[in-house]
Structures are given as C-alpha cells and as structure tokens.
Length: 374
Image (cartoon, rainbow, N blue to C red; front, side, top):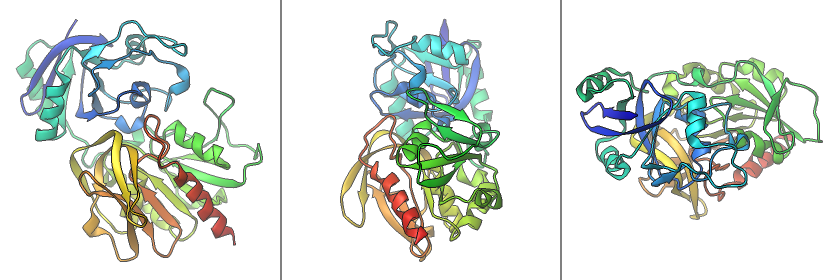
C-alpha cells in the first residue's frame, strides 16, 4: 500500500505503508538512536509528533511487552528507511508491523530518511500529514499547512494517568496498583507528577529505594503534600511547558516545601515556576548521543534526550544556578536553586534507550532528601 508524507512547506515523500492505514497529522522530528525503537514508540513525550528514525534498518529485533515505556504508543506516525520483516531476538514476541497495526499507528518506509532529516535540520521541525487514503500530494500539503502545532497546546492531558497509583515492579514485567502500604523496606516516599512519565524512570526511583506515588498532572500542591512525601519528582512529557500553566502554579507552591527533582518537561516546568522562560528549538534534541558538560566539574556526559523546547538562559533569575549545558548548541541542560532543595535536568538519566552516564542523578535526589531530614 502506498503512503505519502506531506510537509507544510510543500516537501513530499512517497513510500510504502506498514502498520495501520489511514491519515494523521503531527509535527515531524528525527531521532538519532541506533536502537531502542520500541522504547521510542512508547515514550509519551512523542505525543502529537511523527518520528523519523535516522538509522536505516528498523524492526530487526521485534517487540516485546517488557520494554514498553508506557501503556501504548502515543506518537502519530513512524517514518523509517527500511522495515525488517523477520525479527531475530530471543525476547521478541512479535513484529514491528504487527505492533503498529495493533495500536493504530501509521508507518511509512522506503523513503530517503537522510534527505528528510537534512531537510528538517535546515527548515526546522514542522507540521505534516501522513496518509494512505489521499493520493493527491497537494491536498495533503494544504492539510499540513492548516494543522495546529504544539506551541501553546496542552499535550500532557493526553498522556497523564487518570488516577493516582503506587508504582511497583513485580519481577520482569512492569505494573501498577492502587496506593497501598510501604513494602520492600523503601526508605523515601516520593510523589511523582505524571506529565507523561517513562516507566524506566519510575523503575530507577524504586531501585534507588523510593516508594513512588504517581499522581495526575493536575494534582494540586496541597494534595501532593498530603501524601507526606520526602521528595517530589517532576516527570518528562510532551509538548510546550507553557501549555500547562496549572502544573507550573502547583510546582511553584511546592518550592521550598519539599525537595524537587525534574527531568525534561519537568525541568522546563520547574524553570517556569522559578520565574524563567522557555522557547521552541529549531528541530529539538531527540536521540542518545547528546554531549552535556557539568559546569562545576567540567566533566562531559553523553546523554539521551527527547525535547523540542528549551530553557532561556537569559531568563534564569539570580536565585537559580545553571549547572550544565549542551555542547552542541550551548542550551541549558540543568538548573539548581541556590537556596531551596530543587534541581532539574533537560536530559534523561534513566536512558531507555541510551547511555547511562547520568544515572548518578537518582542518588543525588536521595542525598538531597536525606539532607532535608536533618
């Protein structure tokens, strides 16, 4: 079946459809990771977007339930050079094609993803339409031009949990259950705001010794504090941080009340709560090879990232210290409040997929919570 990808600026790519059929619109971005396509597909941060994989062969090791980063894929479309029809891995439970069909995600293969990626780098991330229904490219271009982008939109409401739950990992499979009593001797109680949280973040917090209460993005500061947490975690998530003002207001009321640790969208929300500003990047950071320098130690870590917005370094107040920067474009990668126990990073220390250079940040969160006890 033929599929057409039409960008808002008039660029057209024709290829072969796989996965589901139909028509979708969304922002086109590229991811430079060589593997981890299943984790990328199920990362809620891609809600409202179509993802280009720059690595040419995708699907060669199949898919499995254990590597889901959320309950299902939230992205709009999947764009690759070549689909592997025969997966080869002992953990595989099915093919990528079957997976996308099951969850209604449209895929397109057989296009020049190098040319498309280069175009996005030069023209910037933009709205597009991916269709197996419409054969006229010009009609699709006009639809892409009328498509609503991510700026100012609340994408978090599409991915956050509906009710609070206590995270637990029963063996190799990931699971959720209603809030209950402390088990397994966890030392710290953490409230995790779900702005689109990845399961490996929750897993790392639990492995570090935390009982993790996951709460919806709209949970008030008072409701979060009523759970008597030792710390509050602000998760990753999709879209524009300025599109979730309710989250910013809630976090603003938590500053100074309890230790805070934010990742990705959580980092941007904490910045806004501290009086800073954010802006949209030209084509964002998506992949597992982003170099970040710690400005205190001058050490460099290779990090996994997935975001289209960034913190404006000129907007950071005197009460906030910029702790790290991206060596590719010098954008802000970490902040810390000088007085209160609150810090955040733009990248993903839990990786999944990607390098684990920054895994120590979970221990740093524990250290801050421990210090806050005394």
